[in-house]
Length: 178
Image 1 (cartoon, rainbow, N blue to C red):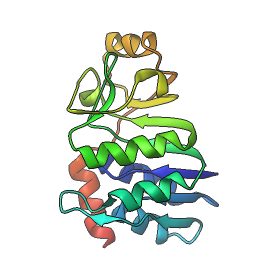
Image 2 (image 1 turned 45 degrees about the vertical axis):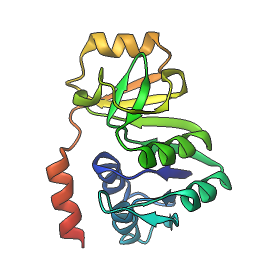
Image 3 (image 1 turned 120 degrees about the vertical axis):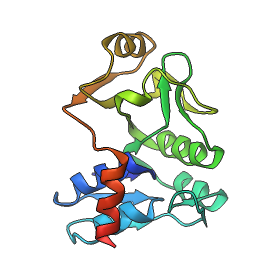
């Protein structure tokens, strides 16, 4: 299986969960996720080129988008800052939304990761509409009415995990890995 993984605390948690598994090809713009996965020699890890930003340790820009456009993967996992039934998945920063949008556009299955605090919220830049989300992975605290609205708007399958890790826990784990 080949997948894209964008940059963020939730996708870093996914990288940590995927690390002990075998045989994945993971293509990411996240330096932290690449390091977590590269420490386990069970995977092929590809880091997308591009401009480094200081807000998140990841690559962005035209080079990143061009590399994504050359590829076709089985799965794309992105973690927006907001997801609602009207606007779909959204981000606050243009460059992050651009990379996530490009990844979703080149994947056979599109997965949005978002804890309950992100659901029913909107932000500045749209990544994709609700109908472009094949799978939403969220936590057990998600409001059933918000989930129903997302399903009615076209979000495919909804998977609820007992709890998604919090950003502070993930950042601490990333710092320990370095």
